[in-house]
Image (cartoon, helix red, strand yellow):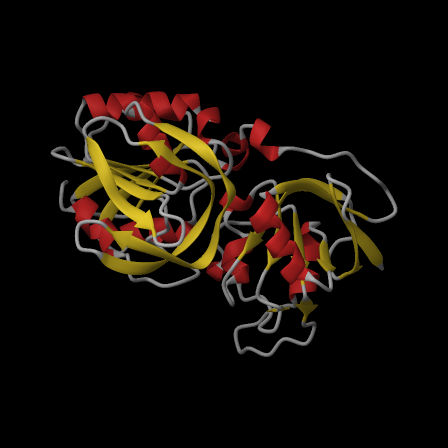
Length: 343
């Protein structure tokens, strides 16, 4: 079946459907990287977004078991690719990408010139867009909603064993963040984004604020919680959205990037060592004003935007990239160890 990708400025692209034939609207963005689509599509940070894959061949290794996903379902609004492979070849493949999209109600289109789309978004910024079939729909701006509330857990859960306990504020957490902490013998208390962690009635040694979708200024309750954590001087690590939330809680500011950073090949420079790391990223907002008492920790080697902050004397730190990777390089896994050394 034929479908259309329609950008709000009027640009219109016809494509061949390989997913669910349902009209959907969201923010059109592009993602770089050669693979990792099962992990990427299940990253809650993609909530509300129609994703253009810049690597031309997608679907060639199928979809693995759900144990390899980063959450329980696909979170993207729609998928645009240049070439879709419906005959995957991989020993872990359980189904085709098209079958998975149909099962989860997510549209996918093969559009001939994804290179033009990526260049257009790079030059003009992320755009409101929609994928339509027989039924037309209006445009939706996901950044005006509290997307975190839609993807965060609703209940408190305690997992793992260890001498140290860490509260994980779930703003749309990727499962590999949990795995990385559990592998380091940490007891985890996973709590909703708006939960009062000081009502738990049990001691905890540190806090991790997770990744998540949308505008960080929409999660005022999480920002308030982080302010209390800073006052109590409890060690804290922010990841992705958590990086922005830490900045806002400490008196800094954030802004929307022109087209964001999405993919598994974003170069970041550690300002303390001048070493460059290739990182996995998925965000449309960034820190614009560094809060007092903090200093830049990482910057993006491409556009020099902030990629992390660290307090000059207290155990507060955050990174804009994903040290847990999944997909992507695992070179920055030491970030977890640095944080846990303060507990």
